Length: 114
Image 1 (cartoon, rainbow, N blue to C red):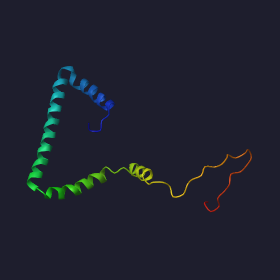
Image 2: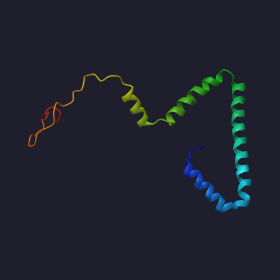
Image 3: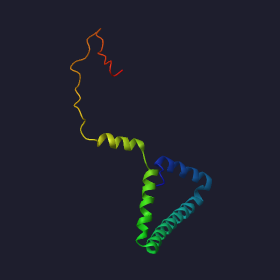
Image 4: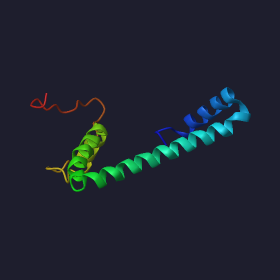
């Protein structure tokens, strides 16, 4: 609901209780829920009217808007995770080192990599 967590909703409820008082809080909650319901009904009705008036052209308008919404909700972390996890098997097998270093032994250096 609007991206609010349970803690945020509880904080808003406590703040509303202090501001409105326990007598007026139930009426305010009813009014807000009634307004939200009307807004949802208005949005659904507006979409239905657009579909009815535009007909098949509505899909031509809808597709670019969906592409824009996908760009707005783009998450680089999720894209990178999806790319790395869905990339398939690695090109070359990775071998684990055979054994650890002994005390006083220096690790091998790859001069081409540094």
